[in-house]
Structure formats: C-alpha cells, structure tokens
Image 1 (cartoon, rainbow, N blue to C red):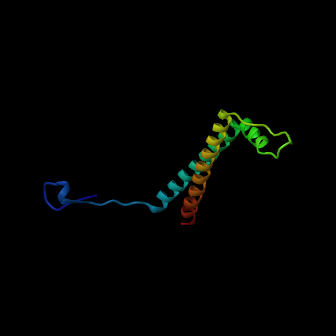
Image 2 (cartoon, one colour):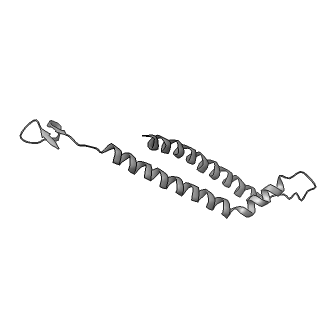
Image 3 (cartoon, helix red, strand yellow):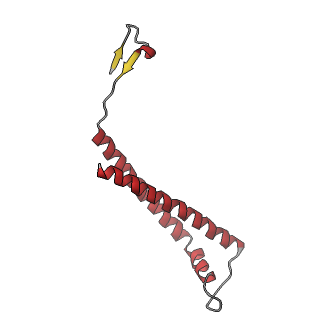
Length: 107
C-alpha cells in the first residue's frame, strides 16, 4: 500500500507498506532448504560414484607395505585431492543447511 505525504506521490515523500505471511514464507524457505539438501546429497553421491576407481586405488595406496599396495600417478593424486576438496565443501554445506533447516522446522 502506498501512503503519500504529498499529492504528487514522489517516492521520497511516500511511505510504502506491505504485509508478509511469515508462516508461508517460512514454509517456502524450509521447502527450498530441503530441495537444496537433496541436491547437495545427490551431487556428493555422484562425485563419489564417478571417482570410485580412484578411491579404490587410493585405499590400496594407503595400505601397509606388502599387502597389495600400489602407487598413484600424478593425475590420480590430483583426482583424489579434488575429490577430497569437493567432498569437504559439500559435506560442510550439508551441515550448514541442516542447521538452517532445523531453525525453520522449529518455528
């Protein structure tokens, strides 16, 4: 709603009033947070599945000597590092969204 202090309705001389349905806004935001959480979990699963071969090689490379230990190439190490960084970022975002979601579900 527009409440003008003068007849010309200049924005600098006008008050603008609006109403917000807080329950509806909170419900919409919590729905968006759930959808984001699902998307991040799917992305994390996709990244892990996509790099399953390198993860297996990494597990074999970190075994004690003499038990099927293999060495990783530079490319494989880079892929492992990338997966570790992406995984850490995605897991951090999941934790943050989880905290945010509890705020809106609690209200």
